[in-house]
Length: 136
Image (cartoon, rainbow, N blue to C red):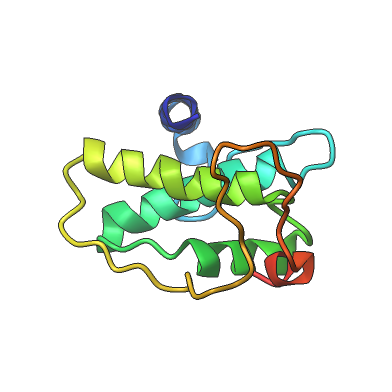
């Protein structure tokens, strides 16, 4: 997905350059148009990655929780599944390591929230409180 995001940014830059002065929109350029079936799961994940990578490149920090909250204020229920949220963390960690941007890891927000860690056995354990996840 990170490679796709990179290609999308490159295509956006080429199209913006081709339009020249005809584009009078936002100073960062035209938005990337992304949509999945409902426009909140995979789309929210993609938009979160894009916003977090931009922030990492500009400030050297990542705030996934704050980014998701901001996106959800404009597009309710974005990033529907815990796996999508986890994917954002893992993908951004991979990106930061690959770009040598990872100097220090400060993890916050990982207090005991009822999440169960699988031990490899067959288990039907799920998140104890879906409302905790929904409110992130």
